[in-house]
Amino acid sequence: MQITPPSLVDRVPPNYYVERVLSVRHWTDSLFSFQCTRNGAFRFEAGQFTMIGLMSNGKPLVRAYSVVSAPYEEQLEFLSIKVENGPLTSQLQHIKPGDSILIGKRPVGTLVIGNLEPGGTLWLLGTGTGLAPFMSILRTPDVYERFDRIILSHTVRTVGELAYHDELRALHKHELLGEIIGDKLIYHPAVTREPYPVNERITTMISSGRVFRDLGVPELNPSRDRVMLCGSEAMNHDCKTLLEERGFTEGNSGERGTFLLEKAFVTK
Ligand code: A2P
Image 1 (cartoon, rainbow, N blue to C red):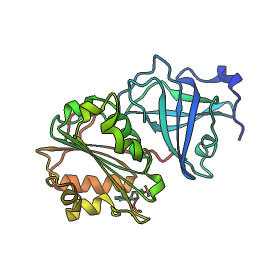
Image 2 (image 1 turned 45 degrees about the vertical axis):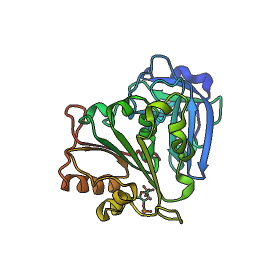
Image 3 (image 1 turned 180 degrees about the horizontal axis):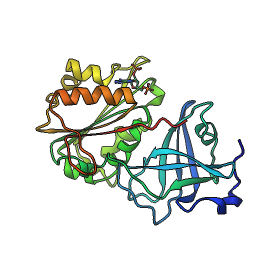
């Protein structure tokens, strides 16, 4: 596969911005994130995704990626897995500062707080790269104004995959957000395939009640809780079943609900 050099960006279709990579962070040998420049005209809501990628053989090779950065931030940030033979990520994992990247001009997605009934406790249940849209939401002040408490559950296979762990632990001390976050944010990381204090799937911990006991909060109830799900198809399906059994209703961009769901994009 041949990557088109930046000098040929005039072949990029008009529905993409061409941005410049600013920094890259490799969390593990299968997970990385990067920041790039942001066109001033690119507007999105916390929780949305857009198509991103590279020019390959004269055509855009793109996949859906949730934006990690907050809407007010000057740069864009994304989180990606690396798949050895994945058409896009086998190339994307080698990007370095200065490289060109395509950013789709039209962000979309259901995981925006306006699609939820307001108030109460907001549970953000993410596995793997399903954390990405929640990072954008948690870096944005609106969520702390709209909900009394926010609980982030992030489950991964290995400790190294707990991306943004240190930032999340310190978010309540953030110079801009700290005051508004106060004690509203609870971060609950779990690791299922290596030793870790919390080492069960979120579905197991909801069914057994462990997560509620550990955090000292009441059991999930649609009268006071809101939930966003972002994980693999299996995780989304299993969590959705648990929520519907408890009377939660799914919202979308047309109708508010007590839970929302988006699949974590497995980008190959
Ligand atoms: P496990 O290690 O028990 O499979 P994946 O990389 O496969 O998407 O998994 C990311 C995390 O999500 C892992 O900790 C995994 O646990 C967990 N997970 C996978 N499938 C489900 C599911 N159906 N319900 C809840 N958690 C899941």
